[in-house]
Image (cartoon, rainbow, N blue to C red; front, side, top):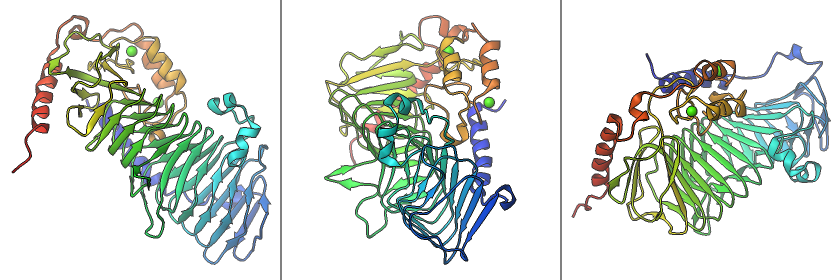
Length: 447
Ligand SMILES: [Ca+2]
Ligand SMILES: [Ca+2]
């Protein structure tokens, strides 16, 4: 039987090319269709419901263009940009989808209301709960072309990146979401700063692609995360991540060159992926490791309870782990720093293939039901599998099928290996492998 991971990869491969092929919808789906050229749109113009606007080579739209009524009930608006340009501060409001295949935009943003106006229009609870008060969400799909200053995602807004050139920064703030699926965001030579930036409850999901040449400001490499930002990395590669105040990085796959959780209250949840470079957690921050075996200060931990976090008394001692995806983490090398004032926890996962035990704690119980309900409707092809979902990973939308797995196996317990104390076979193998790895990592440099 093929493993669920392989199935996920296979489906993702099928999905992405078809997603990239999303193009202009059939114009007959709209009451009004505007083609530019020949039409010309000046400054401070807008379009409403049931309208398609197509901007192609030689076309031009003025500044502060708005698609949809801000904080209103617009629906069925589509803007396709394949050439030409749309002027600064283009706002993709409620009910709109903007597909960028070519051309240039400046300061493009998606949301219910424009950028910083969100905080004046909605409460923090609205923002955290994604409450857009009846407005249809808006979406920007970036397949190609050039985005100068942005795109930005705020409450009710999503930016999907499949390719293209981002010349300055891509921001998620106040409940906005950025999904990076593919393509390469690469610093343009004549700009000194490109950043992937989440702040004030912004969400960034990276499932593929490459993000490189990002922000080097004041000596910090950064994918910047401000207050309460969340990064979910399940694929692709990032040059560096700096996790900001009260922010969370969930790392389950892909690759990150440098990871720094150097700000108070930041949390790094690590269950997989490659971290080949510098790694630091200091100043009141937390590192939570999720895996199948752990070695602390040279001693294999054999009595951890499956699914229960163990707090390492002194986080500055060397820790090695086989993570949930089988990759290895080692805090031993000199460029790995876990400060004595940081918090380090280890959570042993069940590696039994128990259907419905989504959090891999060896039982099918409330925790698994919560994962399903809290992520109901999530498309794992777009956002990656939710973090803390370690077993029996779903491909596609989390829905009735996943709920059925929980209900049908409710009360199920993993194989006796995990019910008893002691070290089960796979863990012994894991530790042996890990110790060999650890030895390799500490090899003297060649003279
Ligand atoms: Ca469970
Ligand atoms: Ca499903």
